[in-house]
Length: 264
Image 1: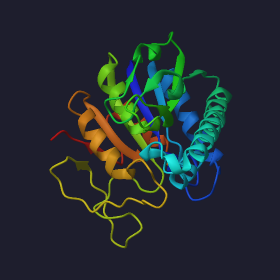
Image 2: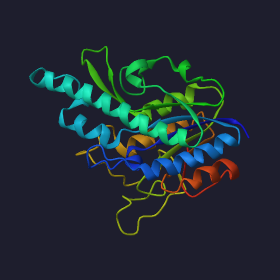
Image 3: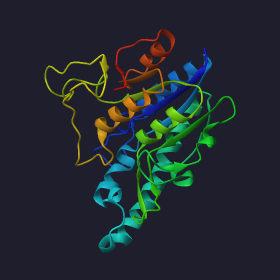
């Protein structure tokens, strides 16, 4: 088996989004175990992770996603510095869990290589063409902008889109979430929520976005970006990262419990 697999670890999977800098190390280690198994099968992995409570809480408090505001600019700049430092800390923990499995990784913080926000951000993606056996690991981050806003938030979902569509040889793009087995027909905490085995942008679904915490669009942005990826990548899925064995099952059998994403 071979080919590139781009994997997103959702911030809600690897952290408690409602509690400042609270990581779910068990979840990260469980995923790392299966990442090691799929690399042993010959797949080349590119890994993106979310910010969760290492980024969203401070970003929300200081309106970082909206760019600079003169009245609070100094506090915003302090928050930007803190978020970047916290994200490096989270990234180090993620990489540490991967290295426990004998994997070699390279950290690629977006604040070092990307400019601008949204799916049109600029940056040299050739840095992700690492030597064989090395996993590049990046994440959603606060980045500089060149449109007068000074800074903004580059979502890991936008990075997923660009890596999946622009890297040669990507056969799978997989989003691992932390609160559901895939896309549900209604918010997963509601009684009677049903897993959708496939989803495309023309399909109706009652999604939910926690605006008081999440600053990058939540599940709706994942769905939109995943559908865009599916125009170029054959296998695009949103699955339950709490059941990481499904990652291996998908790559070996071509099917698992989750939602396969379709283009419009």
